[in-house]
Image 1 (cartoon, helix red, strand yellow):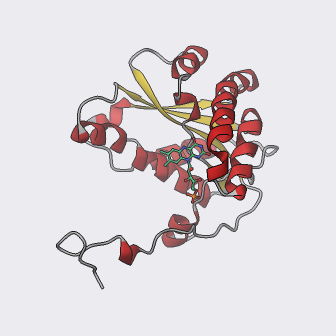
Image 2 (cartoon, protein in one colour):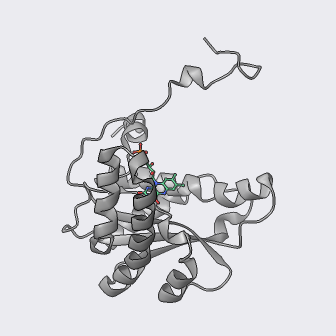
Length: 205
Ligand SMILES: Cc1cc2nc3c(=O)[nH]c(=O)nc-3n(C[C@H](O)[C@H](O)[C@H](O)COP(=O)(O)O)c2cc1C
């Protein structure tokens, strides 16, 4: 797969996750090794931890708060979401415990300070998360960034998985092989309308 295809067809995969096909440790490690080549601010490389959850009982315990938060969010905001996306989100919340691997991304420290500090904190992990997703896609696997459990259940998940104090959980990614290989680019605003030249508001073309 060429780079542009990977970049434009790596979608958030939920319903097309293959819940029955095992995911080998080797492919995860390979993708995480690639992910760690992403840009990381300053000396933050050592702050990143990837926690791969495979144990069925632990997955079920992590999936529980995710389901709770997702159900509440879908009750409140479901009407604002396209039916296809809502069905996809519902599938994930109902089947999270069945996904072969849940990858929890953690960073040492707490997000604090102003724009510059927060950019360094989250900006040091999100390029790696995206690289991880791209590397998975190139090998026939898919994933979705989720943050549901961070709404009020981060400590509970930390206790379940033995995450030490001082680590912030950034995202939980269900990872599986995908049941199809064809994915299309997403609808996005025309880039000419959101790109300016020299002065805010002046169009590039
Ligand atoms: C920071 C961040 C948090 C996200 N949290 C969730 C989430 O909690 N649940 C979920 O299903 N998708 C989540 N997503 C995925 C987006 O909802 C997803 O990108 C969106 O469905 C659009 O899909 P597309 O990128 O394939 O167009 C998150 C994405 C990002 C970047």
